[in-house]
Length: 210
Image (cartoon, rainbow, N blue to C red; front, top):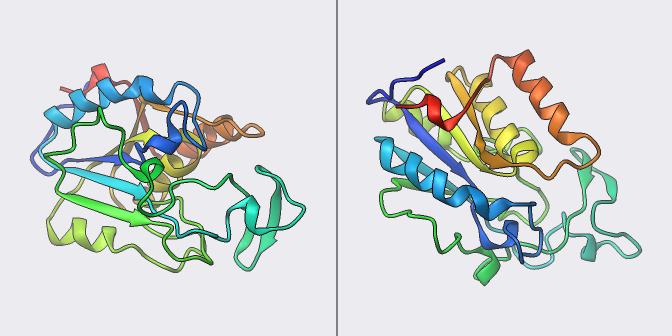
């Protein structure tokens, strides 16, 4: 399937930050390999939005805040299961910065998420309690942007939750699969792909977009 870019299309680049790239605190395998294809997509789209994980020190999702717990353990939190992560993307740290090779000058908006110490945040639209909203849906509607194309890190967490929430907000939503990389924690990549199919989230290759 070929997709012709329209004036009301938006590219949403998810969490292309140092801590999610090789050498970072929560590195996604091969995460930096998608910088160049994302830059090509950024150059092609009329509207570009970035998300940025932005945690305070001691965030509740960090394993280090739970004595006896290790990264990738899971706990029950007040809004449901919570994966515990290594400390990452701490506000003002180098790890929280965008990858230095990412060409962000044309980005029109940066959505920071995860800055509330008691709520983790994967989606660009709502935090993990599913009630605290980022304001992105209203921004898109106010600007009359329609189709959304998602790329970045990680496919099976923040990209997936963002694309699924975009579809739930009635935006036609697509994930550019080869401009993403996955963590694949306990089958999370396969689960994300199955959720895309159930929810009518399109799965594309970058070469299909012109």
